[in-house]
Amino acid sequence: MRSTDPVDDAPLTAQDYEAVHAAVSAGAGGRTLNSLVADWRDVVEDVEEGSARCAPELDDDICCRDALARVWPLLPPRVQAVRRPELDELDGRFRAATVPWPDREEPHRWWHYRIPRVLEAEVGAPRPQGWPLGWEVLPFPKPDGVRVVE
Image (spheres, rainbow, N blue to C red):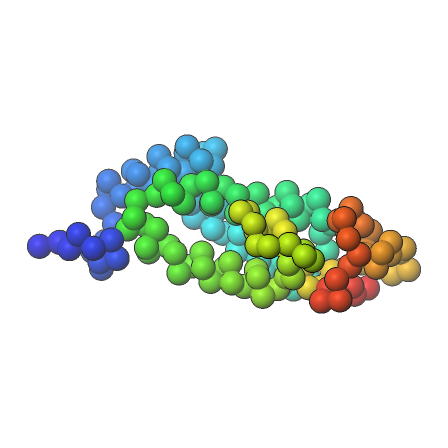
């Protein structure tokens, strides 16, 4: 007899996969759950290595995490339970590789309010308020926990 516990070891069923497809189609414009997680992983790895993106580019790139947040509540509980450790691990890595905006509580869509700990800059380029170009759009000076490398 199959357990009704959402974290049981039984393989996902065709109905589970259909529900995932419907959820992702509704919340992510035809993307797949795997592609959203892979894109989030790519962003996390890039930020861990030191981001060469400017603030607006990073904000655009993390839209995959927005899509995951929209899709997640629509997923079957078993799928959430199976995929939650992976998402939690990526979120934890992103938090570790970033610093929060100064004087800001962790809001809904918290990933938009974090700054990579290491930002790449062009040699000799100006640094308004300590930021490399493309980051000066943030409404505060560069936090001490952010290092700029050339």
